[in-house]
Length: 372
Image (cartoon, rainbow, N blue to C red; front, side, top):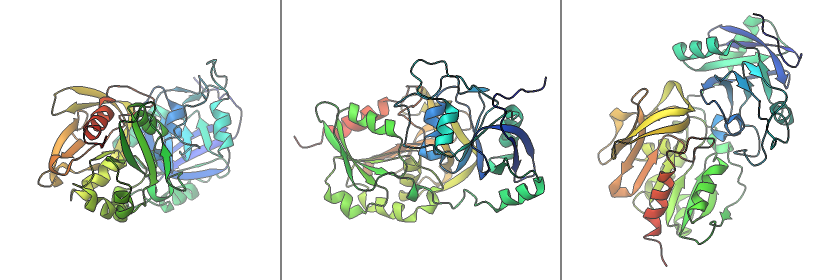
C-alpha cells in the first residue's frame, strides 16, 4: 500500500554515508541538515526526547510508527529548545488528541527551525543502522542528487572526537536552585548539557542545587564547599573533554561524586578507565540493567553512543551495573574515593521509574555527612 503523507509538503531525501537512500516528505521545516543518524525505541516521550541535550547534533529516528498524536505539553521540555538536528518518523499525527497540548509537534519543530520528515520506512532504516552501525547522513528537501548528498554526509564531522558538551550548557553563570521543602544537603551540579528533570529529582529529595557550567575549575568547586558533586548527562565524545577530566581528578576523594550518562563516562576517564564508540548506542526507555550488588533488574531510560570499556576498569573501580542486552558497563563505583555513576538516566523522563532510588541513595549518603 502506498503511504499517504499528512501534510503535502516537500519531498525529502535521506542519504547515509554508505550510500543507502530513503525517501519521505517533510512535515516541519525545509532545506537541508546533516548529522549522525540514531534510532530510539521509546514508544512515548518524543517531546522529552527531542529536547534532551544529549541528542544535540544527531538526526533522531523514532522506531515507534505514530509520532505527534498527543501534541506538545507545557512543562515537559528537558531544555529550552529542540536539540535534535532533525526528526524522522514513519507517520506524523498532525492533530493532537491530548487536552493538555498547547501546540503540535510540527509547530514546535518549525519554531526551532528543525526539519521533521515522515513516510520513511523506519523499520528498514532501523535494521540498516542496527546491522551497519550509526552513521552520518544528510536530509534534504532542496537537493535530489544522491551522490552530492552522500559526499556531504561523509564530509560531516564524525561523532568520534567531537566536543559538543562544551557548548551545550544553557548556563551563563552559577545558578542556585533551592530544595523543594526542607533542605537536607547542598549539591554542586556540573552542567554538560543537563536535562531539566534531573534537577527536579534532586530538589524533590531535599537537595539545594548549585548549577555550574561544566568548564568550572576544581578550585571553584572546592571553594563552594558542596556536600556532594553531581556530573550531568550531555552530548558528544567524552574522550574529547580532556579539561573536564583533569578538573575531576583532584576532586575525587574530596567530594562525594555521582554521575550519569556523559558524567559517568567522564568519571570513568578520571578513574583511568577508557571509553569507546558503540556500534549504534543505547537510545530508548526499555533497556534492562542488572544491579550487580542487589541482583535486581531495572528497566531503564538511555541515550548514549559511547561506553566505558570493562577491560579497562582500574584497580579500586567496581562494576556495579550491567546491560542485559549486550553486557556493556552500566555502572561503576570507587568506594575508597566516594565516587559512583551509572550510564543510564535514572530521572526516567519520560520513563520508566525503576531507577529513581539512585537519587535517594546519593542524597541520603551525603545528607548524613552534611553539616547541621
